[in-house]
Length: 187
Image 1: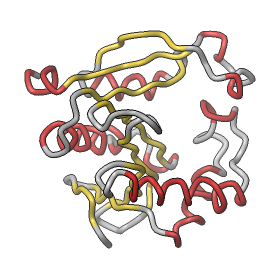
Image 2: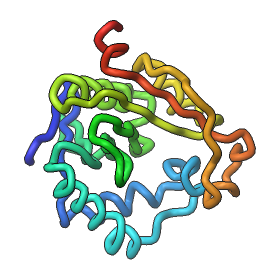
Image 3: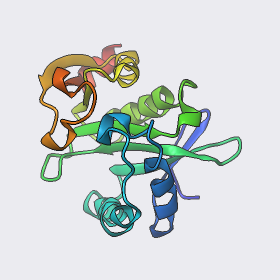
Image 4: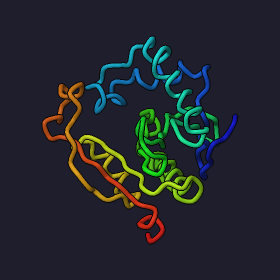
């Protein structure tokens, strides 16, 4: 396994062309997809023909430094989901999004906080990132709690995209959290 980043319990690696089934399985869980699609799974052909090729192209675009990273537990090698650290499609490399999508079996174990904290450290100490931001639905309290544990600050409210309006809680909108390199260094 070509390791991108290690924590005490996790190993993050770049996805490969052989990983479609991992992504399909993750996106087939209604609870995992609750705040993204209202629980509808991502169609396997969308993962194979659009999502995975875009993930792989991102590594090329950002020199392998940024993108979506598969997360595995170090004790047994189990795939638990993914983390994202990347700019907007035409954005600057010094302003990046942080995100995570984990299997239910990994929820409540501190994996999201552990992986995201390590990605913040890498972003600010190795990759020259100035600001890391994350967005979620206002009603997604679990994700918001992780952002707050990372000392990210609530900076704005954001509209829920039109393709997510059918999700329970969409009427409450979304939120944006941020942390800068200077804020991270002072915590």
